[in-house]
Length: 442
Image (cartoon, rainbow, N blue to C red; front, side, top):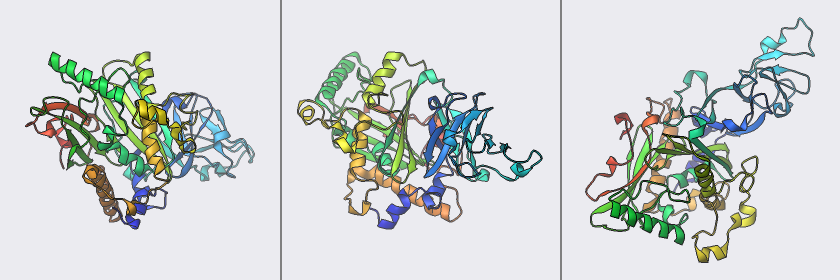
């Protein structure tokens, strides 16, 4: 349980808040690359409580800047995208991606007024089918987080995106909470598929955890709803194991599911061999969160069928489940389209799509949950550790130190979640695919 003051400090992200200043010291996903067309319409972006505009010039380069024109405040979201710059509709001011004022056509021809004004524009890096921005002081710009998928072509990457109507910490807590897997995302049909696959893998002598099932979900060779959690701190956050009894031979084997929390809001979740998965919960403002789930085939392009199956499993099919602004059709106003008859037949939650299931419980807590009211249990060990580390990082930042994960290079490319069934005496730290020794315990 947190105090009211701790809860406030942890959850608020505005530019004038301590956590807001901390978050501005990291590279943040602002939108997906596919949202911007070269020479096309600008895109409204809200990030950490700031209203921004993103656009892609005809040359392919991306700019992200304050949405209000520096002249009289007209929105640049409705500006013209011309000559690799935005031209305000009101008086024709033309602004470059780096914030320079290129033209003031209503001013005298010999005016040098444009040289005295600069639009607020942020550093941009495009990689991994995402547009990233750095919103902090230039002198503190960190190394770009080059994950193992950020250098892969778009054909190998699936970016799932949705907007959650609640605070970012509520969403992050769900991403690093392994215990809910046995309940929120459970169904009779999934259990039957998992058991059949585990039995087949055992007969063949294969690892029963290494693959997606036909519906796009990772095979779970366990039904244990009481995982034992073990956590170790790292230089970038922590990694932890949820250890469960397998569906068979529990006297010989254990199931180990390893997740990495990478500050400030990343969760590297278990992936089959040859795949990588990262979940990010980016604060739009105090009560809205942009959810990104990146799933990458590290060795080959996604085929159309697999891409469609994985999108369907998440419940984020464009035009059916989400609109053009990544808002879900299933939301609080319609109780997330929960089907009580479906709950009797198959799905534990009665809600279709794993992302919708997550957002339903997170949004049901309210815009910002009052954590003074909660009663934490042993299954919340990772959630407790995340809160503690972020609050410690916040205190260090206020005393003049760098936030967590920014004091030394982070081996992003070697951090990957993993789930395996291993002998009962094998240390859980052998799972988790930390391929660089500097990524281990701090």
